[in-house]
Amino acid sequence: MIIRHQEDITNAVMAELTRASDSRFKEIMSIAVNHLHGFVREARLTEAEFHQACAFIARLGQHTTASHNEVVLICGSLGISSLVCLLNNGNKGQSETTANLMGPFWREASPPVANGGSIVRSPTPGSPLFVNAWVRDLNGRPVQDAEVDVWHTSGEGYYENQDPAQADMNLRGKFTTDAKGHIGFQTVKPGAYPIPLNGPAGEFLRAQGRHNMRPAHIHFMINKPGYKTQFSQVYSSDDPYLETDVQFGVTQALIGQYVLHADEPSPSEDILGSWYSLDHHFVVEPGSNQLPRPPITGRATGERPIQVVLERTE
Image 1 (tube, rainbow, N blue to C red):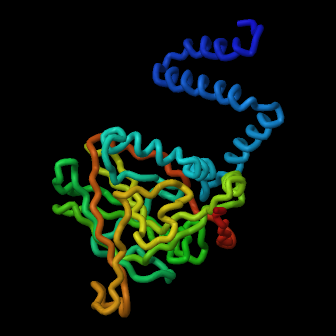
Image 2 (image 1 turned 135 degrees about the vertical axis):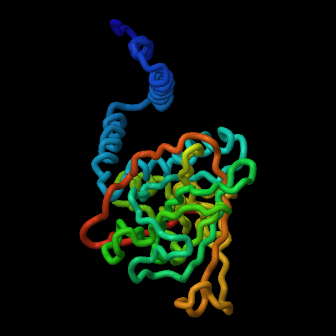
Image 3 (image 1 turned 90 degrees about the vertical axis):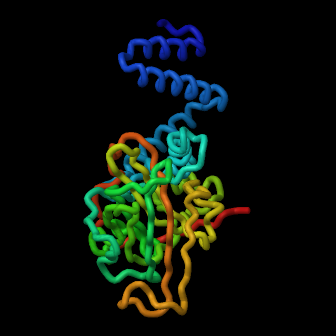
């Protein structure tokens, strides 16, 4: 099509999309083109702003490494990750769900751990924590033999892939649910942490006057044939960042009660003094247990990153 007016551009692109053989690809791209062209017209995007946006998008890829995914990070900071999750779970967004963000720190091949075992593999800051979790189906029946992959930060707010002081796969492990759909393990209470600011996501937050903090949480990935793979994060009810999570991930169903036990003996003879417990229930839906591509594949090298916290403007 020969272009005579700016309106012709959208029609020309849409006409070419009709050649696509994949109907879902054609549907998605047609909607994307309409919205993107509409955005350019509504924003009256200048040439300089267009080139600035292209450079920003390019830097998202340039800042993505084996141990850090900047693209996933900014999708969370825009609320896109949470929106996609909630639209695809809980009866397609119609009811509450324990599904949540995958996050940018899931690694494959974390080691199997027996129920009741510990995932602390090196000296790690944080209060002792004993976790019990149950997996049930939509009818309330226990889901046996589900694989539950667990990972979280130390009490200082570092994942093991960020922190050379932690052992490989520290605070990570895979469990198998028993006949009651139950798993249990020992760990340390995770800490809240700032998302990195040294890339485009940091520029984006600074421009809005937002802080960069995620409330403390533990990740759970539940996988069993016949059920849709579920990623969850159980947030700490006492965390000051619940209302302003930089990744918009906190849902009511996933606010966990991390209970402090100051004067009771712990479940482990090795733990003296105060400790915490967390009990939580997950509900999985029928579907495919296919796993997504892990956002990271390894550990960072060198010194662990310095945590920089932005203040949230009022």
